[in-house]
Image 1 (spheres, rainbow, N blue to C red):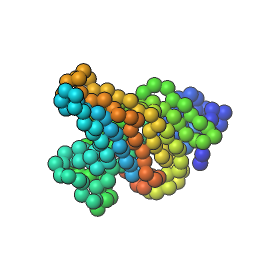
Image 2: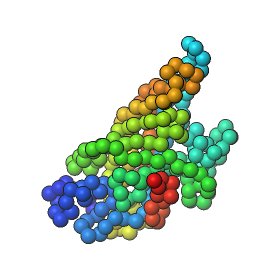
Image 3: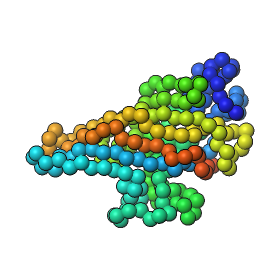
Length: 222
């Protein structure tokens, strides 16, 4: 089913609208207890001070983040590993993460970490396009920064694979629209970093698998 604005969500109230894009199909069904998996990619660039008057431009791409999350010293990850966005469909604010998927086992890569994403501030819901526009934080240390803020566009849709057909509405696509950040140690000293331009974090295609329960919580619990 498709979710439509306040006037068609009678009995759910304002709090339900906050959860509409993340997994409520109708009043009384409650939160959907599964985590969606979508192929993802990322590219973030920054300038880094290496010496007086000398600056390097550093680019962190999808493979670089996979190596960081798997704590690997290799030049590139194995072909069976890919970056994915995890999203738990029961909470709009706290449960999304970038993680590593093992294509050989069709499961999260054993022993790998994840980069957590959090909601920050107010959001906008476009009923006509079934989209949410919202500010978010990301775990910046995995990109060698102290703080990264971003605005994201989140498209809703039906999750058709391995999901109860009554409970199909969840995050379908995700992409950043704007990004800013800072590194707190420096002011011209070696190691200082400044984001070069707005980076990119996005899903590539629709949800391709689901995991029972809140898998994100295992990575991103407070």
